[in-house]
Amino acid sequence: MDFFPVASSIFTLFILIGVGFIAYRVGYLSRSGASGLSSLLVNVSIPCLILESMQVPLSSGLIHSMKILLLIEIVVYAVSFTIAVLVPYFFKGSLFETGVMRFMLIFSNLGFMGYPVAFAMFGEESVFYVTLINLPFGFLVFTIGVFLLRPDLASHPDVKRIITPGLIASFIGLFLLGTGLTIPSPLNESISLLGDITTPLAMIVIGTFLAPLPVYDMISDIRIWAISGFRLLVIPIIVLLIIRFFTSDPLLIGVSVLLAAMPVAANTVLLSEEYGVNAELASKGVFISTLLSLVTIPVIGVLLLT
Image (cartoon, rainbow, N blue to C red; front, side, top):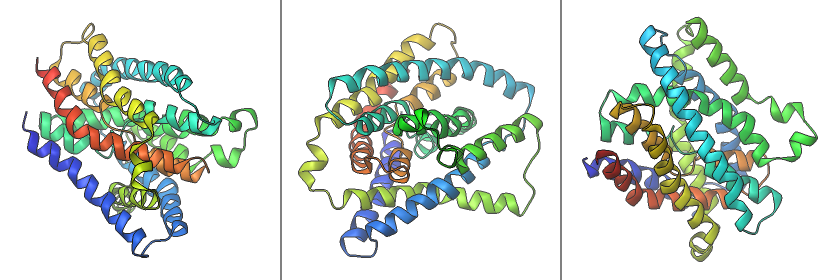
């Protein structure tokens, strides 16, 4: 495994976080401006990214791969959900903080970091599998993920807060995938361009949320370190041990475990801000877990090669 491309992908994200951090500190971006960008990401850019990721031609080979990956992803999310239910009980936090912690444990940064890191470790063929694994991600984030962050919506449903552009995009994307229909040009190119701004803009927004926090506050929250340990090492190792029982394809195993080992999803920050919960806690989770992933991803890579 070549460590340099992996490290380069992670450092690129940190540079973008640094841009947001500096932009806030020097006054180029205010908190309200960052909130506006976050809302743009959640309601426009991410839905476009979901639609673009589902523009995949349906074939017999794709259907076979999807069946295997479906089993693998059931394992991944079953392990993640189990840990997400148990771990927050050991930490103090409000109802909404518990929801943020559970969201961080379940959803990894497989969209923003998955493509470049998988390409660096497994080559061009892995990109296809990353795309397939990303398919259910947007749907789950905008359904189960929303209820995790705002459990009050489950008991007092607010249709306007639940039927989001992200959820609508997920259903449209699934319909297009199932029917084989494609979005015509130039609309498709516009959607692609809007989706492409997601990663850099999301990292910049995270930087702006970290900027007001004292350095000690960013690194002293023991909950974040524990959650990062489960997110980066415990979950992917358990997944690796289980999925080896029903597939021997090294690429399928490698890509699936690698994506399960990604740091906390950047969407955690964006949705926490959008739904009025603890975006600072989410920002610390993304920052610390991404920093630690510089060490843990090569460790997972070594395990996959043994």
